Length: 181
Image 1 (spheres, rainbow, N blue to C red):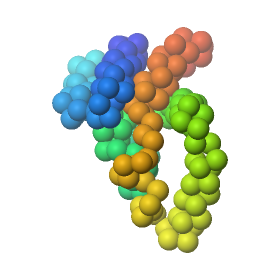
Image 2 (image 1 turned 90 degrees about the vertical axis):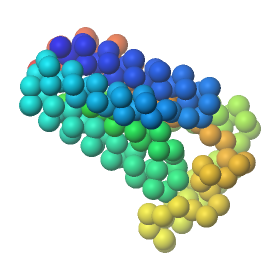
Image 3 (image 1 turned 45 degrees about the vertical axis):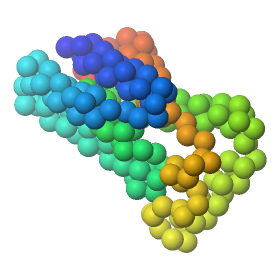
């Protein structure tokens, strides 16, 4: 069962990444459908306990990404894709998936900074963002956000797919510790 759930997460994430790279959008049919399918598979294969694990994974993964959405650091599609992936991987794998996705996102961001020759600007903006949020709390910066046309958008769906795939590949190397077993 665990491999089926992990494969579902990877398939959902890869389809989301393909859409994100191609159009900067992750479709609702994929995110909502992926979440519903994950919970249906969990119901059929593991019962209510498994559904609870999936809901917890969806809430944690989606909730963490929702914080970045609130400050316009990422789009709603990324949040919904993470909730769907969280439903597939469940509570016990959320930390591994989130760490792997954060690492993949950091590598992608560095690549984009170098490719677009925006390293200095990006680090300057990062400092401005940190200072702004320390002074103003959690709210969107009026100038530094993904809604501005000149902002370079990293297709974070790609980071979600890469991180999720990494967890699938390495899951067999963790002495069978997947989904808390």
